[in-house]
Length: 154
Image (cartoon, rainbow, N blue to C red; front, side, top):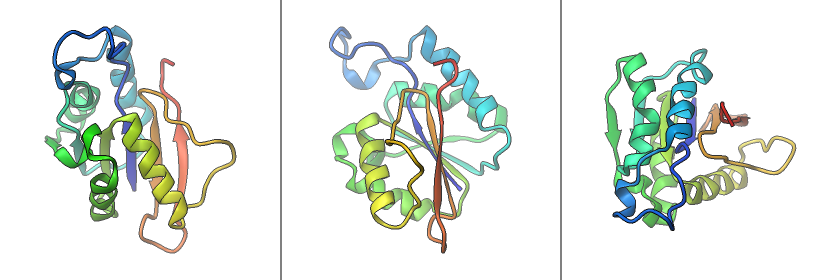
């Protein structure tokens, strides 16, 4: 299984006055990151990989603490990469029960790539709200599927 997580709510990037990579999650984002622990509780997780931005790392910190796993950061999940490097990374992680936390632009690219390459597309338009998760089953197998877990609280 692969779990594609969009970072939790981090406020308006146009109002943030510091370096964008340092922009933290908001109070709502902290609630979403804590709720992620419950949303993913029924699933096996062996690895957590995140964009190095503060908002992505902060999103998966509660999950990492609960599971006793380190957070690996990878520049390939950064918003600047354009998604190609992230797609290659997710394929390398197939079969590792890995959480991958990244940005909306990257999630959009990854979903497009996955659906174009045989992952069964669920009914309805793809979405990736902040704090949401796409659970990808059997990536690299015969019948890969995807299902959406909305953020909680929304």
